[in-house]
Amino acid sequence: MRIVGFATLVLLLGTGLARAADLEAVRNAAWQADSEWTAARRNWKAEQETLTQGRSALLPSVTASYRDTESEFDPANIGGTADFENTTLAVEARQPLFRPGAWFGYQQAKAATSQAEAQFRQARQNFYLRVAEQYLGVLRAWDNLVSARSEEKAISRQLQQTRNRFDVGVVPRTDVEEARAAHDLSRSRLIGAKSEFLIARDQLEALTGERWDELAVLGEDLPLDGPQPAQPSKWVERARARNPQVQASESGAEAARQRARQRLSGQLPTVDLIGSWQDADQTNPFTENGQVGSFSSEAETTTYGIEVRMPLFQGGALNSQRKEAALRHEAARAQYEQAHRDAGQQARSLYRQVNSDALRVKARRQAIRSAESALEATQSGYEVGTRNVVDVLNAQQNLYGARRDYANARYDYILNSLRLKATAGVLEEKSLARVNEWLSKEETVDLYSVGQNAATEDTTR
Image (cartoon, rainbow, N blue to C red; front, side):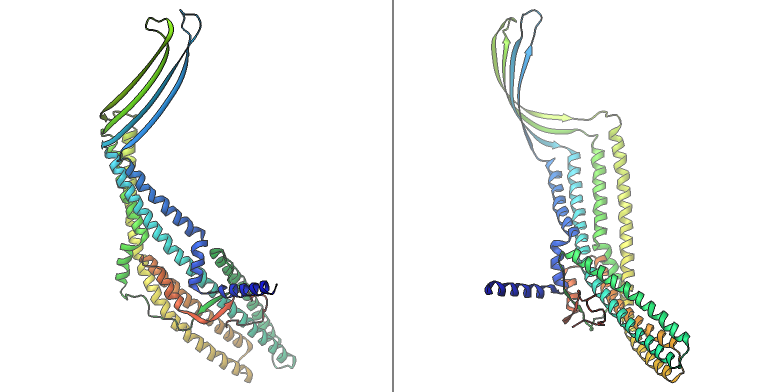
């Protein structure tokens, strides 16, 4: 029993350590658990079969058939009925010699496979983004919760101090009402922040299929060097050339073009080399003079040659299909051109956004220092009577608002950097590995301390 108990303790401790995770651990768990990514991998494997199916129309085909029939015959000039049996075994081989429709169908399958490959690359980038957004979303919600909790505590203390000063007649009752209103507002923000955190935590667990007790937090030293290379034109060129959605649209337009050519070739003749072998056995109850008797025959036939087919008229369907395919090709080409322009515009916008985010992080950091100094000066003025409680409450709200803005700016910078790489088609596993290096090696957040100790301002350790 002691051995079992010790083994159980070791297992529990090992599980607890495993759940204190960073971005890499979360990505590894989501790789198997994320249903959207699993479906993308399965669809990609399924789409690869399209090429084999398209090529099959150009290769030889062999079919075999067996037929065994019995018939009952009741002639008018002979009394009774007669039964006879036919048995046929046949094998036919066919090699296409000239099938333009099959050739263009094969080219269409190649383009469709290329389109599926681009869509798979897009799904993989979406997976990386989804993991980063969910992980950083939990950290963002936690920072906002800590800030809201600290703000609520500070304003609660201010409300108590104002009540005490009112009791001794130092401040009017309006100051108490102002402090109470600010406290009620801070409690409302705290409730909303807690709800958002719990939702973000649940979403991360739904993505990975695991419960995470602790997550590594974002370190304070965040590189703010901006996008590299630092020329927006380079990112625009990358996006137009490597964006998976652009590549998928281009391959889709090519597939539509080959489809149009296939429909056009549907009015052309086809030529096949054919060969067949047939063995037929027949038992006939009639003799050559029509009398009932027993007669059987067996025949073996070998046939080979060239077969030419050409459609002449099918109610106008061929011409209609040709027009439909041509119009769909024009539509697919227009979609590709739009995707090409959108990718360039999105890359340029995200490049500017990332640069703006880097400057915003620096500005928000300075804003915290300024807000702290302003709060200290306002509190000093309040103590000597040159400032009122409204000024103090506003200064406190400005400080905690600056802290929230600073935290959000850091997460926005990271996520927009990843989105820029995704737009340029260069978001890879090593991109997440670099973000993982920015996480703290010592500090984590306890995701399940919420509600257990509501008075705790900061449980990072």
